[in-house]
Length: 168
Length: 284
Ligand SMILES: Cc1cc2nc3c(=O)[nH]c(=O)nc-3n(C[C@H](O)[C@H](O)[C@H](O)COP(=O)(O)OP(=O)(O)OC[C@H]3O[C@@H](n4cnc5c(N)ncnc54)[C@H](O)[C@@H]3O)c2cc1C
Ligand code: FES
Ligand code: FES
Image (tube, rainbow over all chains, first blue to last red; front, side):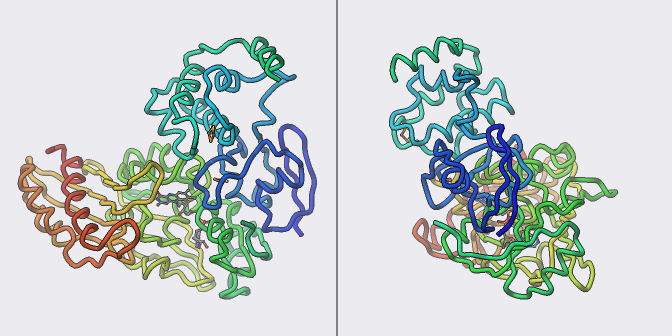
């Protein structure tokens, strides 16, 4: 067992873990943060994408011990006081998901993309999201949602949060 | 899947890492970015008793100049290589080819040293360091040694590093003024190269004065294409480049797998060499 200290979505955890434990299993099985799914066995699908120390990573391809001392943000750590971020609103409004399995990873990868390139072209969005697979949408609306955020076209967070209450 | 159990060490200095590796012998595996090792562990294709995480050893990350050479720390990530102004200025081929490796999340973790030590013939960067005639510096219990790129790749997934040696830096001669291009053929986004061609070309008076061509996935190791290099010398237009590129697959022994036959790979090597050289020279 190896001791780790990791901050996840703003909370710091101290834990003893087996060195072979993958970060995604630590998040899901140990911390109960099941918002980050596992989609493949090959590091290809990107469903498990989270942020580690400010950069996107595939949490199925990082050991929990490698995150020791680090700061992790999952899709569950994005909303503030129940209010979604612009990207979350845009995915909702532009129908950028169907089954939703790829969505947490897509949103985390899109955040990373917009941080590096705040005004991407649609080709740059496609390239930036190439590590994330979606079986449902055909990607069109995912690209539209990301471009909408880049162009500042999303509704204020308050409005989207109430939309969520209506659909919930 | 869940990796097999292993012990874990995280040395904080190069000395400690080398000592740990030497004591553990064949049963230890170095972990850098983990983007090749963790998939292997997860699929249970590797069973190390000890994983030695070198990711936090200071001094092995970043790029500096040493006269006519760029010195790139083995732990420099793909992302950092792409962004680095020195690499972009003096080793554009490396920055350009690294942009084709995997996807942004993998490039945040994966390292240049890991890509080379992994010695995958389908990896993009081994051919690139071969074309650049880089030198690789390893540190082991006996001290430091410098290995020319052409002597570094031994066989499929096998470098000439000893199990207790660490790759610490990659020394790349500056290639200011050379044209460059990496042409990678793959069928879907984010997949590995079926074949790739790294071209580095110096032009003089409108003609090719010197060409370096290195091939990805045309054998068990990355290969130079000496016949094509020779035939390219003196070429002054696109037709001459196309003729010279016909010899790109000479002396290679590409493998057969689900995506390509050896004949098809040889065809790709010729076509991609032409494309890469035309792009590198601007003759296209
Ligand atoms: C989805 C996906 C797609 C990919 N696509 C591509 C692609 O298109 N092209 C491509 O080239 N690569 C691709 N890769 C591989 C990627 O580039 C890896 O980052 C790289 O091959 C290994 O770097 P690493 O630092 O992660 O090494 P690790 O996985 O940590 O190590 C790899 C091997 O090298 C050894 N090693 C690592 N560092 C050292 C060192 N300093 N000294 C001695 N031994 C060392 C390890 O023991 C291990 O055997 C892909 C990977 C994934 C997961
Ligand atoms: S589950 Fe991590 S990439 Fe697919
Ligand atoms: S919405 Fe179903 S996988 Fe993307």
